Image 1: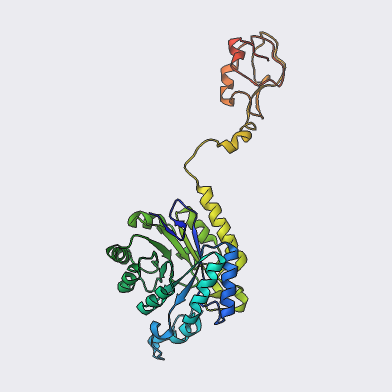
Image 2: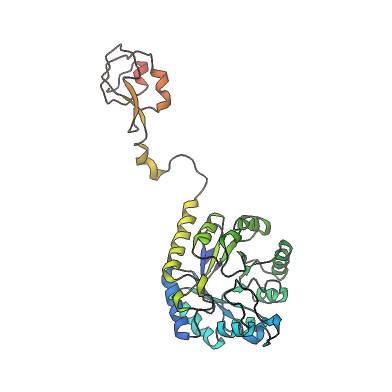
Length: 355
């Protein structure tokens, strides 16, 4: 259930693989796109992803109602699909420049192809892996073509039903693919946290025996960081240099300071998960000395009875555990014991030992 991409292991036994999604937030500026690569790398992400399509490969240039977004809650309400994709596209002639900048910056550059011609183009760019969008995940022929490149593939599940996810996974495996990741994804932009249902992550991992992650469209980093505790091996978040400057996905994208925080906190959560463990660790050894334990709280003469007045549970922890106090109460001291002496079993047996 794990594999490697350019030396970076992906799976439950490794830190989460963090992807910064550029999408159309470059605002049609190559300079901005390259600067975004630099900033994403400085944040510590593992990879930066772009999108490979042309408006005409996505939709038809039509004003008919079917081709106009009708959603009052969407930031794109009233916009023609063709115009949206024209605004958001990453020009194909930019791709190699972006991927080259990723290599220079030490991160993995890859893309989402939206049709089979995009796969052919990306193969010529020698991308190391592919992503299938949640809106394209029912295009099984596209998944098959991607898998047959021999590259790993990440698939957002989005609105897919369980049976549709089964179809995707079957297509991957029937096409000879074994290196793939499923991403839990809510296909609304932005996505309310209450609709994220990240509890699906461990169920998906168990059901399909593959690494699972989260493509997160919520505001902030809470859902993404929380997903790590549920087993997310991959986190994808949209990235922007400055939300105030706009961009097709800017409203639900992370700025550099936030992306850096996501990288750090997701790794912190992964480290904190550790293993099932009770009791102290070697690192806790010094702290153990500050637990409560039993001490002689007043000078005790030989033959004097142990009572609540001369035995107390206090810090530090060099004496017997407090639960043994009742064993001593009512017994007589076999020798004199000074205040501040930690209680020990020889105070019952009579074998004096530097008390």
